[in-house]
Image (cartoon, rainbow, N blue to C red; front, side, top):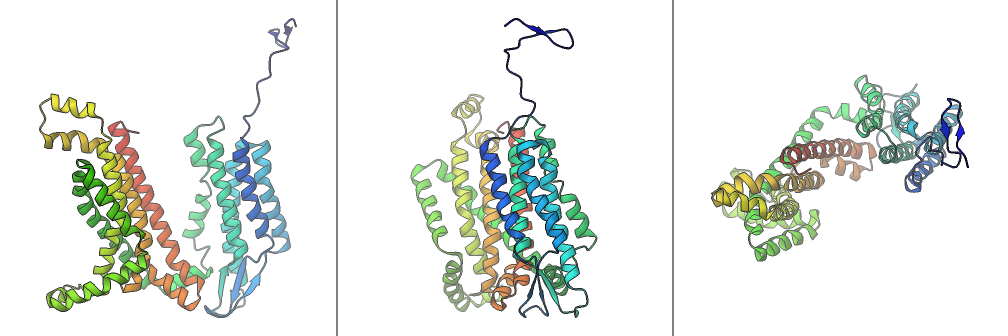
Amino acid sequence: MDPIPDASGRNVDADAPTPPRTRLLTPDVLTVFLLALLPLLASLLLPWVVLRPNRLAPGVPVHLPALQLGVAFVLALLLPLSARFFPRLLWLVGSLLLAAGFWWLGSQTSAALVDQLPFARASASSGLWLWLLGASIGVYGVRLAGQQLAVNGRAWNWLSVVWLLPLIFWAATGYFSHWSVVVEGRAERERLIQEFIQQITLVGVALLLALILGGPLSVWASRRPGVAGAVINLASAVQTIPSLALLGLLIAPFSALSTAFPVLRDLGIRGIGVAPALTAMTLYALLPILQNGVVALRGVSEGALDAARGMGMTDAQRFWRVQLPLALPVWLTGVRQAAVLLMGVAAIASQIGAGGLGVYIFKGLQSSAADLILLGVIPAVLLAVALNALLRWLEVVLGRRLGRV
């Protein structure tokens, strides 16, 4: 067909395909948004708050008021509709969903405690948790969508966490002060700070000990395949032992040691307490450090080592100036995995008197008080996320500086 002049006078081929106005999302990403919609809609049928006369008494479920249920229903439907027709607005819808969930957490717990006695508790219930779960899946889908849309990736990632701004503002201004977990946190403030510091200390010391043991062992094993297989298999075998069982198994030898050598007891080394907890945590952290260390050191190219050898470097110089810097980014991945793993094991260590945030988790389990469990879980999760992000940032910085990422 002959070219047809358009409005500006230019010739346009009528048979040429029209370029799409908007890049559509793939079915996989659209499925993520549909999966997010299910818990969002299910949450509307469930109570959002449980009002208890005190921490331990049975509670009364409280549903969202009818008007707010309608608003929540419309917000939930916005997610798949935006994904299908307005994908560039997904960051706004995802942030709205999460921010709305946290807003309802503050407003509904405050409303539930009106005219109640001071020791009454308003806890978040299944409806609110399901809403936050669905909104979190939606925000995860937003980040996936950004990889398929023709947008600036860094700007899109920042837009997808806009919901953090109102959350930080509300947390700083005491908007959640009537939520039962915050009430328990206020009542336990001094002890909570003490256990938080103990959690960081346990994880930090165990990670340091694992690095002191695992570092030289990785270097040795990377040069001897037989040794590598033996130490990695041994570390793997240790990880198959449940953490609580390993802590229990260490009680007897530490008790025997402290009885045989009273000076150890004077130093605080006993069958229960910090010493067996640190031993178990160090053993658990060895596997990722050893495995990544051996892989990283063996992964350094022979060409780089040959070039260093050709420059007249000694074995020690080749290791410190070439092999270790090139292996460090991959090795740090193992350190990051070990740090996150230790955060969970440290919570279990409270069972043998080592302290940490696990004190609240097990105290809540024993008394069926979900608020106390959350009082231990929430700071532990936040700590793990912050530690993971910090070590990931260090990996990226070192990788870019050394040309590996």
